[in-house]
Amino acid sequence: MSYYNKRNQEPLPQEEVTTWECTKEDCNGWTRKNFASSDTPECPLCGSKMIDGVRTLVNLQNNSQTKTS
Ligand SMILES: [Zn+2]
Image (cartoon, rainbow, N blue to C red):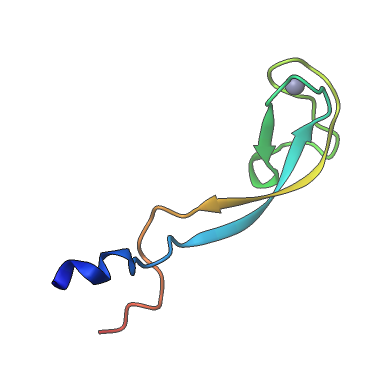
């Protein structure tokens, strides 16, 4: 029964990125700070103010330095 270990998946690589988050409650607008051109950006969707935030994003690029073999 080798299928037993199928659950033992490697966790997806994740990275924390600093973001700007839209302050409007029903808006999902946000952007990476890396991509923001201003210190006081406006939401690209609704034009509201944006505040500091942090998001944990899955890094789909499998080029981490942990692969040494
Ligand atoms: Zn917005």
